[in-house]
Every structure is written in C-alpha cells, then in structure tokens.
Image: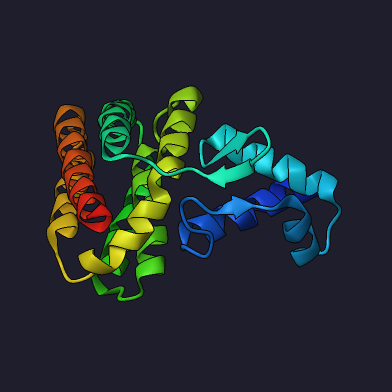
Length: 215
C-alpha cells in the first residue's frame, strides 16, 4: 500500500481495519475512542475520523450512548454481498479481458504460480487479491472497481478466518487457472462465467463456515 499523502486518520483507519480483519478486534467489540487514541499515541480527533471511515466502509456501527461496535454480518448479508460481488467482478473481467496488457498477464501468471507454493495464509490473501486485481486492470470503469474493493472490504475479516481451512485445497487454484486461461485467450465471455462461478463457490464455502462458527 502506498502511504504517501495519507492523513493520520487514514493511517489509523488502515491499522484498525487490519486489526478487524486479523481478528485482533473481533465482531461485536466496542471501539473505545479514548483507549485507542492512547494506544496509538494520537489525539482523539483523528481517531474519531478513523472510526467514521470504518463506519462508512460498513465495518463499524455507531450507536448513541454505546459508541462504535464492530459490525457482525449475518449469513443472509454475506449471501447478498457475494451475489453482488459475482455480478461486479464478472462484469469487471468481461470489460478487462480484451484490454489487458501483456505485462499484467505475465504478472498474473507469476502470482498464480506463487499462490501454488505459498503456505502462509495471510500472504495467500494478498496474492489472491493481487491476482484478481491484475486481471481486472484492463477495466476502465473506476466506479465499478471501487465498488468491488468496497464489497471485498466487507467480508475480508471472514475470509481471513476461513483461509486456514482452505490452505490445503487446490480448488481455488484450479478456478484461477481457468480464469487466467480465458484472459490469455482474450475470451471475455468465458472469463466472466468463470469468475462468477468462482465467486459464488467462495461465497457458499464462507457462508457454510460462518454458519458452523455460529452454532
């Protein structure tokens, strides 16, 4: 991440988002502005702004007289988010496939290879996002890409928790290989179909994981 030009509030929001995603700040946790400001050795003003950013992202809910609480997503909400992701990411790769640079295709192939040998689940997450971002890079619709990023941010903490369970399966690597091959062949329609199927499968696995976790 390029930190140049980010405000203190932006940096704090990034730190809090990472803590939420890795489980250091779990669902339902109350964010105490005073304590967090003390922890990061900053004033309460940028911390308040950072928490507002997380509210805007949908990660936090702010209640009168209760303060900020890390939001818990229901299985139904996860289902809605993954339905949206399937549509958005399918359209992004459809628009991207014929515009992808040769360099980004090579980089996507390299990232796919690195994922095959990666055993550290946090790094797997970074490589997975990089793989998809490279293949969507030919999409010129900035609003569409922003919506994709926002919808990913909603579920990243659940995907982080689930990633350990997925570390032994080659399912996603097979999906990625099919998506990459379609892009290399400039087959936009097949790329869209494969991405939508990939996202839908991921959503079903995550919903099952969260359902069992809630039992």
